[in-house]
Image 1 (cartoon, rainbow, N blue to C red):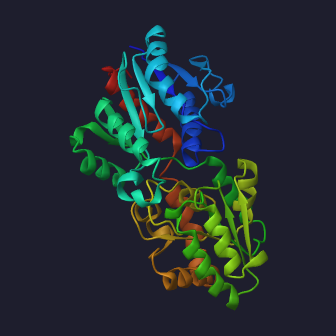
Image 2 (cartoon, helix red, strand yellow):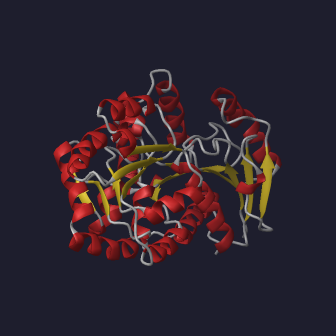
Image 3 (tube, rainbow, N blue to C red):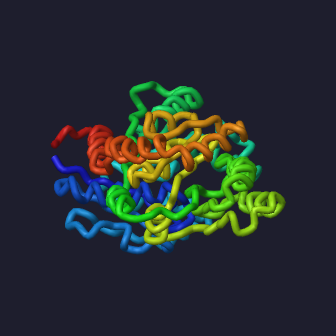
Length: 374
């Protein structure tokens, strides 16, 4: 039997929530490709337009007047009006892709956890944000019927911190943007520019200040290279900009801020190498994208980055400036290594497809709804 699936996209602030926006847009697009049987009702806020909802006959757009930018109002709407809307629209299972969910709902619920950073590294949060994350993520973990973790590392954190039964949490990995594989083919036909790309929100756990310190030493020996930091500006932006200035890097470092996908594709296509020094991740989507594009990649030797990149990336200790420096040297100067990584990257990334993520997510939604229909 067909299932009516509600999609809680009230959290989505376009250009303001980092990788979780790419996750939802890519997943919905893939669901529209693989599933024409079940009905999807996508509940959006005022900032998110109809373009989030795929133009497929079994997808319905359900706009609401709430603004994601004002979190208290969004949470209030999510806890009160959204359950009522789900009841009126006869939703069988509510899919919550952004950490939080209604505490009381008229249907089954599946909630996605992208990480548990507030548990692992509360020091990275503003003091007035922590109560929100602690309360509402706990409620989502215990009130949802099933949970999706984007990696085994996140699954283990869920089981550890919330004392959940193992059967409640399913692992569904992200996919790689298909456009990145095309970029990889285009890169083979052109001369890459001498810049090292890092795609990352400027938060403390992204470890950008340590990368800058290592890059200053690298740049003194290899002055022809630049470092491009592309991604949403976060709570750590001022410190990153100050560090770049104090290190005297000047034009050697470019901080782009948020860029649209078109500009991001151009940055990937031209990059000489890719570096990702994060000290904590729930998944690490930029690493998969860099691998898919065939860019020689160096990333932190942490989980889940080690697992998703396998032997297709050079790993380093993110807390060791010398190790980061050595990785920068090798990934830019060692031609044998660069050729091997460029070949291995797309093969490794091909293991992560959004169609597979969509099928696995749909299986979880059906299970929660009590349906085994195929």
